[in-house]
Length: 427
Ligand SMILES: Nc1ncnc2c1ncn2[C@@H]1O[C@H](COP(=O)(O)OP(=O)(O)O)[C@@H](O)[C@H]1O
Ligand SMILES: [Mg+2]
Image (cartoon, rainbow, N blue to C red):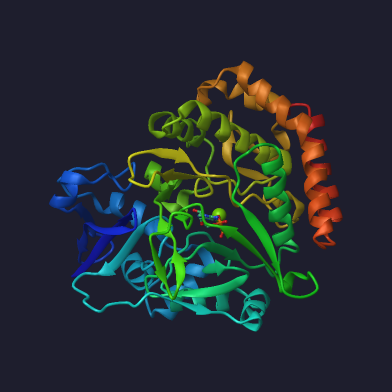
């Protein structure tokens, strides 16, 4: 029998939300605690407050959705001597710090985990940059931290230019991603894509490149400030440093009840309509967030980001969980710069999945699915297309000044992708 306790942090205080019970992953079910039902808010759009238990598939959609994917998950499972499919054991091992404000623990575990921040030396940070996903997994297991996504990454605490490893239940402030052995200059690619989006007025994660040497892939990391942490209003300290508050978030796959394995859309799944409905029904500011979502989708096409699946979009909850907004854009990468990349977008636009067949007309044809008028779509498309070259040039200039020498080549190639989209006749 497996019994896991689920907690959530609200304004720095932890509440017991409920439990997951079952013999194994096939029948494990989540149920809200009766006290939480009286005073709390739902922890997922797909898990509305109710006293009945949720089905095993509803349960796994949300909770399995908290785990790393792909190679990272395989390595973590091996470290924990767990079966890769046994999400309960992996969560019990890693759930001390997840994305958002949830914490998971084996029920009845009475050990106290002393939260600490352990200073990382410059050499350790450099090693993190140099090593592949294995090292990152070691740190991840050590900190019992569960971050979704497939790339090698860790959650670290950053304070006045120094990096710390969070221990026990200590929250991280930044997500730090490694380079990729096969995808050259991906850190610079992502930073350039993020900065350019920000210059276009798209709310984007606040990121920077950590360089520990000569700007080579093996010496750089991409750090981004966690939007689901709030250090400015910290109410307590750990080891004399401010401890951030946790804010809750869930990705679109969790919020739509779609399992992670189906994060890439197949034609006919209707994800476009689903994601706009999700925002319209749940956001506190649906008008603003629908336009932002549209802007992100157009931007993905302009830079050739075909990895724009529904786990790369998230909902961010207000500090008391009562309000929801579209989270800032993250994981923006010009994937089409790599010959390994698929040309299939991860969200289908008006029945078109192929990046090299999508243009302004495709977006306009998707007006009924998005529930946005063709006039507004045309206005946003035109605005982003017109401002793109200046925004890209501006971010290239900034990164060039910071010393990133591959930026010109990446930026020029990105510009070529953009030109091919803009000049494209509909196929
Ligand atoms: N700055 C951030 N703040 C909070 N959550 C983040 C941040 N960056 C990424 N995430 C979360 O972490 C997950 C993995 O990050 P992502 O950049 O998508 O990595 P990967 O390249 O492995 O997919 C995302 O789905 C998102 O929910
Ligand atoms: Mg991702």
